[in-house]
Image (cartoon, rainbow, N blue to C red; front, side, top):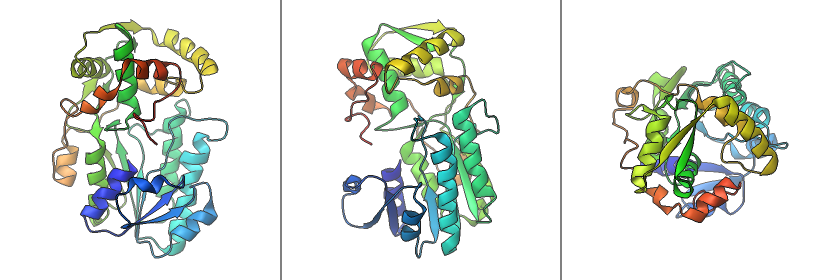
Length: 305
């Protein structure tokens, strides 16, 4: 999402400074109009060096897959706390936090709980803030849809956790970036939590069907009890380094993940694009890409970050 946000900020004539975690990733920007500092949200010293004369901060960093060295608490909570501290030091006028729809004070959902705790760091900071909580986002480099497309490409029967009736409200990354760029100068959004999504609320079943139609495939859906899929996922996580789905993500699939369908139009003044007709990027997923995804490896041409 970072590159899309940078483009939107430049379209709105903002000067942009980026904190880049991995050297050379700044090559994604087409010119030298973006100022780059290297560092991590886990490194307060690097943050302090990057925040001089900054008036607004858009915090995008977060992880949805945890590991021994990159825990939810370290990145999604403490990382936010570190960025907040650096922002307070220089007197930032507007802190914009990208959270997640469904963020909750319930430790039974580790990812969503970590996002809620990160939000609390912002709320209790004393800074002028806006917290934006999007539903699932889609666009080139999208792990969620590309993973499902890999399943559709490689198997005639697509496993679906439970009934598949739980609903999502996918929003395009480009539209999310536009919302964030517009938020920078919005005094009326300070002190608010804004939950946003695209124009359609779609069930998991409908998302699978849409992906299959886009790829020109006819696929059956096999509804698997969540408890059974959970056991299989636990085993898979021990076998492959990057399973197509984690137990944390499996828990979240059962959660209704929607906002008001008109929220973007009412809050930001434009109509976001629907999922249907805007996911041509999944056509680049090949059969062997699907095999690699199932075996725990996301091809770099699908997710290059």
